[in-house]
Length: 124
Length: 106
View 1 (cartoon, each protein chain N blue to C red):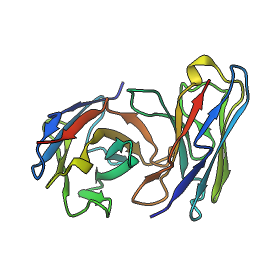
View 2 (cartoon, rainbow over the protein chains, first blue to last red; view 1 turned 180 degrees about the horizontal axis):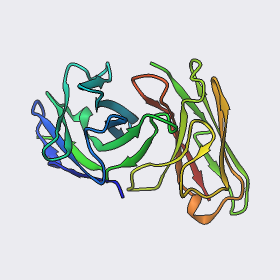
View 3 (cartoon, chains in turn green, purple; view 1 turned 120 degrees about the vertical axis):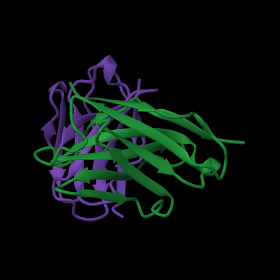
């Protein structure tokens, strides 16, 4: 059974770095048909896809244009996890952050497995 | 970016009702459309992928249809556990985008 377990601080100060990690069990971050995504949700923005990392003989990242200048998604194969880093945060980045798996194939990369969510508040 | 527009944004229904939610994409997305259910305080859960395929474990009262730009999620006979918010999402290209949600209330 595939599970995604998120961890990270719930409070970040403005202008600092938001960091959340997603540990994978029952699957591999390096699988050739997988994509590992970050999504956030807030009352003002709804569900917003932030980006993904995936392995196809080498590592690739895709980021949402709206956030591309501030986001880094990386992976740690030794720990089988991937991480979100968001720089220069403002109160508008306050949201619940989710990691999610997508699989290339019949599901057409739908997000079939989600982490439990991490509420991150940006406040001084 | 592909804009996803859901309607209605909320609806009131009773147990046993047939409920239909629509989702329109701003451009042709073929069948690269999925539906999620979200309950308060929980992560979204996948119901339907590829516009009309039922995710494993999802009750058969849920169904999806459509292709191109217009899609529909139908709940044939609403059950108490179906009161939730439903979202559509396109996986045709990046950035992935979601609809604004439809809250199904009693």
